[in-house]
Length: 212
Image 1 (cartoon, rainbow, N blue to C red):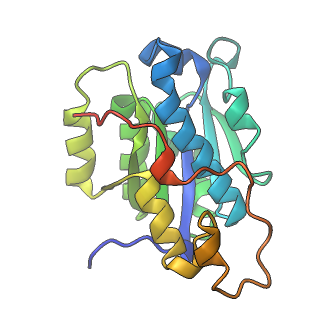
Image 2: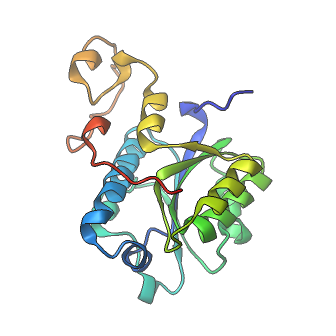
């Protein structure tokens, strides 16, 4: 079966997007922008679509911090938040139970580090039977050559994608694209809550540098 995103069956996992790791992996703040813009819009879309969302923070929080403020402002109010000791999130029983309690079969994964917590968490999700979509434009690491980690996850069954690709799969058709008002106006959306005013069209996001 060809892997496809199902809006009614997908959750979002944001793994360890903490200032310490972000600044260590991407010291130049201007180079952080492509990643932060995409993660910000991922969270805005998750909130608008009521997608179950889980956020993890690696210990010690006093050193690593929590989410950058701009991301904290857009985290869905009902998101699950966990501190963790294990690199692999699924090794924490409460986090594994939260994933299983989401009521979805698919998880889109973003965060850090690609070759450590992302790798181990993705393998754990696959072990539990989830279909995992790796948001490559929302992954970062201090490792200059994350290719082996990415290939290992894809060999295990994870599916590569981006936030733009995910966004368009979630909306599926022109008349359901809320960031294009002309198309949106052609559809019928009586029960939809207001779309975030700060959402920028994916085509206008700054370019990102693919990890090899």
